[in-house]
Length: 257
Image (tube, rainbow, N blue to C red):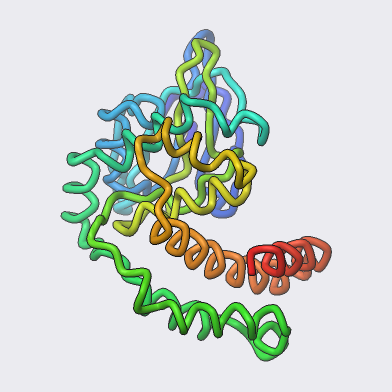
C-alpha cells in the first residue's frame, strides 16, 4: 500500500476476516484503504451511509484500491441501539432508490425465503442438524416458508450488529461493512436488530421511530429470518471450534422458538 501513497505514509493492517483492509496516516491526513471493495461503495458514500469515498485506483494486476475518510469515532454500545438515529438511518437505507438501483445493476437478484432456507439447511452438518433445537427450528421454517413472502424488497445490510455502527466525533452515524449486502425483505435487518437489542415490549415504539407498523405478518417474517440466521451462526461457531459462543446461539434459538 505504501507505493500508492508514498513512503511518508504509515500503513497498518485494519484486521478483519479478509486481511484486505488498512489504515493509513500522514500528518493530519487519515485514510481507510480496502482492496477490491464492491462498486456499491460509491453510492453508499454518496448517500452518506459510510464515510466519504476519497479516491479509487486500479492497479496493474487488476485489483482496485479504495480510500475512504478514516473518521475518529467509536462503535455503538448495545444499549444505544434503541436510539432514534439508528432507526432513522436504517429507514433511509431501506428507502434508498440509488442504492437499490446500483445493487440491482451489480446483478444482485432479490433474495427469497425458500432458496435461503435450502441454502442454510445444506450448510448444516449432521451434529447441528441432530440438535433438538435445530429440528424444531427447521420444522418451523418449513411450515412457515410459504407464509413469509413479501413484495417489499429493499437493500438490506445483513449484519446490523452494534459493532458495524460507527458514531463519528461530530455525532454523524454511519453503518459500515457492507460485504453481505442483499436485495431482500427489510424484516431481515429489522428482525436481527430487534431480537438482539430491543426488549419485545418496546418493539412497537422502535418501529414507530423507523416508520413501520408492527403487524403479525412482520412479526412472523422477523422470527423466520432470525431463526435462519441463528442456525447459520451455530454452524459457523462450531466450524471455528468456538463452542461457548455456539452454545450461546443454541440457547438463543431455544428462546426464539
